[in-house]
Image (cartoon, rainbow over all chains, first blue to last red; front, side):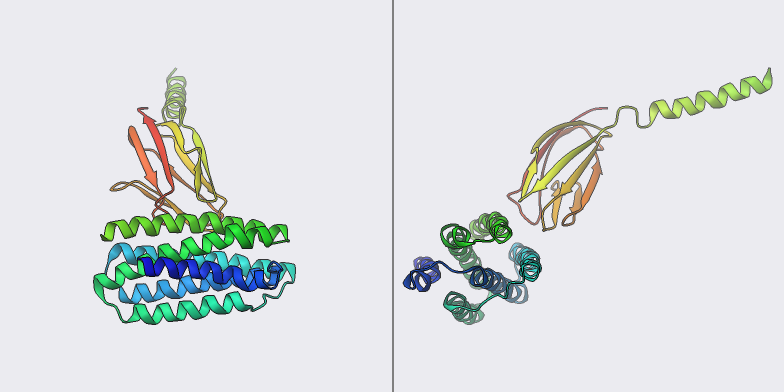
Length: 173
Length: 107
């Protein structure tokens, strides 16, 4: 758990560091890319869970993640199109994607209850990290009002996911 | 006299139908915005309709464990007619931390 938590905190600092190092906040095209990437990562993790898990509650949670993150990303894509913003790849998106790929490999080796616990614990930590980044960095940095509003809606949704994941984690104990 | 009786009978049947069916049944709206049912607590009677207005970009449900389940698609409305009296706790199956309460009085 501590390892996962520290990994989550590392993810938060990864979100903040490259940007702070440049002494500038992320731009809207970068924020859009980070938010979209974060959503895709959770959908990928959920699809793996739907394939691997045999636990009804875990599978239901994973299906909720696919449904919600895909819905949010559809909105995000529609918004960037409307605003004529091209999402811009950046160090934060890249490190998020790299960490997620490593985590997926690690989870792929697990089975049964061990997998369920590890997946759900990671979902708790991941949503915590993303919510922290939304609150402290992405939302305050967004300059377009519609983007800011979508990120705020996202934060509400992902806070719900975090609580849901915590609930599932408690049931698995 | 007979035709008059007949039309009176029809009239009373029609009036009876109007009197007994919807009577005071109401539609009570509950909005859903950013994963919150509002108002979260409502009072209603058997026969009333609850209409959920989903402003979210996500699908939700209004579900009572072991009883009814209403799908509420993103940006759509859905409704349910209350069938029995009692206190009802409902929640969203997709977002279990979304909760609502209906105090249902008998007709």
